[in-house]
Amino acid sequence: MADDNTGTTASTGDFVAPTRGRIAMRALTPIVASHGLLLLLWFLAAEYGGIPAFILPSPAATVQTLFSDTYAWGLNTYVTAAEIFVGYVAAVIFGILMAMIFYWFRWISILVFPVFVTLSMVPKVALGPLFVVWFSYGMGTNIFIAFVISFFPILLTTWRGLREVEPELLELVNALKASRWQVFTKILLPNSLPYIFSGMKVGSILAVAGAIVGEFIASENGLGYLMIQVQAVLDTAAMFMAVILLSILGVALYLGIVLLERLMVVQDARID
Image (cartoon, rainbow, N blue to C red; front, side, top):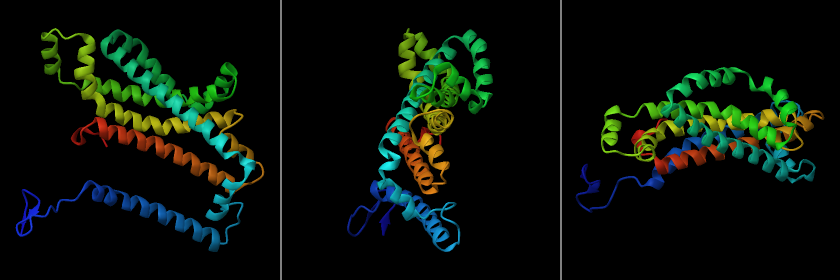
């Protein structure tokens, strides 16, 4: 008979609680199964659905494009990854800094925050041509677009997290004559981390979209630029491969944030 309190059996004393590896495997199983099912449906539709290859290429034809030097996959993937990562990191840093300023200086938030809200409502695709006119085209402009799109949710959630700290706790540390930096590092930042990571997850998705928007408008390299080029000749297999690589970049960034969150935020405090 099992002992519920110890997780051991009365006869053998063996530990029966699930290990972390088993828990992780259990969580990964539906993810792998759903993607495998999607791949199977894609294969069946392409091979037996009577759909022309220029509309839906087969998985094999899509993978074969990776072995062609025509598409310069390495360079284009590197350019897009750099645009996403640099724009996103800048958005995280600037978003957290602006949230701190808004928290400490209410009059700045009253003046500036409505402007940020208004600018965030403007479709970034409409601003893209203006960015090209102002900053020329290339990686710098695409990084800036990724930054602009992903910045606002990080600012908003971080600011909310800072305001969610219990007033009694702040009164206590202020009574102990803690400096503003000590209050931030010991109280405000740890308590707002769940909100920060929530905004970072949303921002990571938007950063990918921002980089591709920039490459669609004007670029010389990148997966978005490549998609525009192969679209003209109906090379759908290369377009599919570009989308897959872009998805891998986005998923890798998102999983990196999730891993960092698991290291820095206790499970009960996480905002899923």
